[in-house]
Every structure is written in C-alpha cells, then in structure tokens.
Length: 210
Image 1 (cartoon, one colour):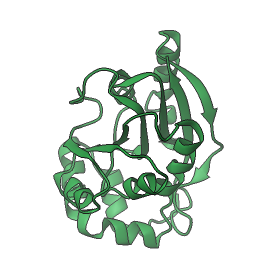
Image 2 (cartoon, rainbow, N blue to C red):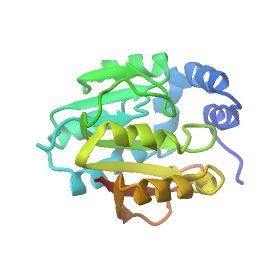
Image 3 (cartoon, one colour):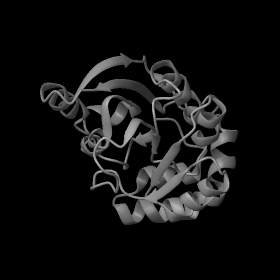
Image 4 (cartoon, rainbow, N blue to C red):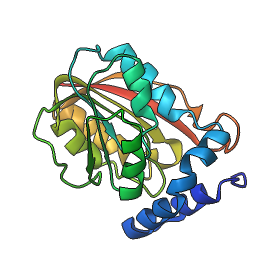
C-alpha cells in the first residue's frame, strides 16, 4: 500500500470503533473538503452518473446515505432532482452539509442500525465512500432497502479491500435470494482519487428494489 498523503484519511481508516471514527471525522471535518478535493476525490460527483442513468428525476425523494459534508447534494440538484435527503453519523459533517442548502432533510443516523424513515419512503438511495475500511457494515444495506420503495434503486460503492472481508457477497446474495433486490449494473474497479491515493479502489453497484 502506498503512503497516504492525507493524515485525516489515515486516521479514519485506522479507527477501531464507532467512537474513534466519530472522533476522527469531528477532527477532520473542517479540512475534509479541501483536503479530499485537492487529492482529486471524485466519488460525490461520479455517483450522479449512475443515479441519473437509472433514476428518473420525477421518481421521488432520494437519500444520500452517509452524506458527509454534502458534496453530492448540489450535483443532484443541478441534475434536476427536486428532493434530496441525507443521513450521516457525524454532527459536524451534517452541519457543513446543511450550509450547502441542497438537502430537504438531514438526519443523524448510523448505517447498520435502524434508520429513522418509514418503509418505502425513497425512490432511491445512493452512497459513496461509505462501505469501506472501518466504516458502515454490509448489514446496513438491509435497512436502506427497507426504506426504498419497490421499483426504486440502490446505487452505492464498495471498497475492494472490504468486499470479501466485510461480507458484502453474502449480503448481496441474501438480498437477491429473498427477492428484495435484483442486480442492474456493476462497474469495473476505479480510483476514488484522481490525483493521490492510487490504492483506494472500489466498484459501483446498482440494484433494483423488488
């Protein structure tokens, strides 16, 4: 693995518990955008390509699951999606996201736990850079599917290093075998950072909720 240029990213990936991860993001929040974007972080903008390919603009509300500082919200608004909601477990990140004025609702919630929305609420959820080292568990997909309506879409990325070790293959199979979703698209591996961090590779996945 190459040496990381980002001290904030190093601390986030090194977190061993939810409390440590929250502390790392709290410390990093004020420099998060500047540091990530200077390294060529492209996930918040690339995800809009998959969403716009599969989700009509008038389909209904979208959920940015793990919205962080809210970089994806303005992109979705610019593409004509009228209602975008967001969740994140970091109060500091949510405060920054609120300043972008691109989200109709922002809620503090943790992926892997019960989410504060009713069944079938969203037309789609999207999530980038969240299913990665030391972050949200694969089991978080169950709740995200619960709050997404039949005919809606799941659009998210998974880091290559956690796909097997994090049990994503098993969760994907169980959601398929239970008739909860069906696969639509899987991208090749690509870089999360266009400039630095060349070892941070992931895939994007699209599923249709049944």
